[in-house]
Image (cartoon, one colour):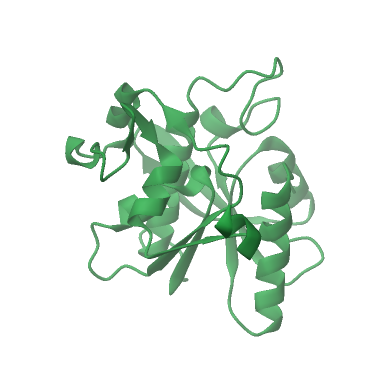
Length: 211
């Protein structure tokens, strides 16, 4: 449905392999235009709708093409229905509100994990991949009955670093903005957030872990 490199390869192949071992693995993906178009063509169904801040958000259920893996698309047109690739506009520049876009995505992920999104399914483990999901472990930190979290680093070169005033958009207390938290040389770092707050951290290979 959407591919930007090795992250997409792992996000597609690992859930399928785990499902063959009879684990109930489900994927959460932003509702990018091409992904929603393909999903609706395949007969996807809207399973939930809710208000999150100023936005109306819908969750569409479909299957990962060619597999039995359930896939959820976060449909929020003001943030994800855009031309260009997922992170940059047609001129190759980062979207100005990327921090806000993936903060909302993270909140939806945390809502699903805690059974607050109107779905009948809750995970035992939340597997976050790269900076785009780095705030999910932070949002889940406040819950005592939360699922376990693991954060996988696919590419350390991309960390989701944003100006400090973006912290207000996340809704997080200023107490998180410290060197032991999500602050990184005076800026907000989504990848560091995942590393600090997830229960476990992994990489895509032993060699990359060493690196």
